[in-house]
Structure formats: structure tokens, C-alpha cells
Image (cartoon, rainbow, N blue to C red; front, side, top):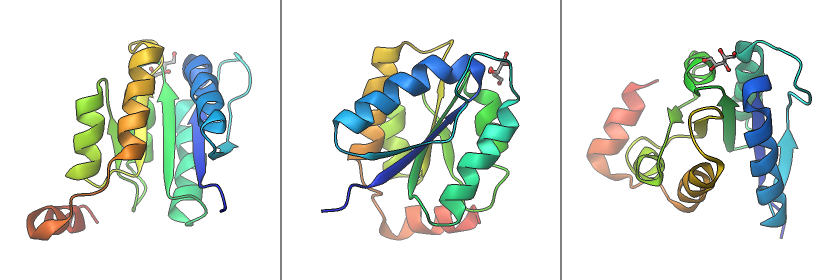
Length: 145
Ligand code: RB5
């Protein structure tokens, strides 16, 4: 069976969390597509949101994870791309509902605001939950464009 690729991208403030989650994903058998950043040098989060959005919109990967200091800037930037539904989550319930109701395809996390164990719980919920579908959720998600 071919391992599902999961893309990750972060700025310098999300580097540590992104690396921790990449390691977990590889250990869990996913193919990790790490789009950087790869050092603590200061970078601009929109550039990494754009890289992540490009691989999701192209269909190369179905799901991705983005991290900046708060998760706010990088999720705003990612959501400017048509077809990206990035959900900024700080608990597993939000991550589960982002999949069930919003069919989120990108999980956004705050590397400076959310603990790594909570982030791990968010990621498990995000990857382990299907879109609920049904007429009302499907209609609403379609309206997102
Ligand atoms: C970088 O210092 C910080 O502003 C960025 O990671 C993020 O939190 C922006 O939303």
C-alpha cells in the first residue's frame, strides 16, 4: 500500500512543532512532504502558506499542516487560495469538527500558543475524522468555493 503523503509547512515560529509532527507522521507510516522552513532564521509565513497551498490545490497531497507562532497569519494566508479550507485549531474537538462539518483540508496550529501534546491530539483528530457529508454540510462547504 502506498503511504498517504501529508504536507507540512511552517515559519521560524512554527519550526519546532512542525518538526515534531513530521517525525510523528513518519513514525505512523505517512509519507512526509516537508516544505520548510528548515532553520530558525526569520522568514515570512505567507511564503510557506503559499507553498503548502500549491501542493494541496494541485492534488499532489490531500491534507496538510501549517504552523506559525499563533497559526493565525499562516491560516489567513492559506485560506486566500481557492480550494484551501484551513482550520486553526487549539483543541482536538475543533479539529474533529473542522473535518466533520467543514471538510478542512489543512490543519493550522500555533507553535507558540499551543502545546505540542495538544497539537498531536489535534493532528490525530484531523487525520482520523471523515467529512460527515450530508445535504447541509455539503451545501455549505460548496459555498466556500
Ligand atoms: C512571527 O514572529 C509571527 O508573527 C508569526 O509566526 C505568526 O504568529 C503570525 O501570525
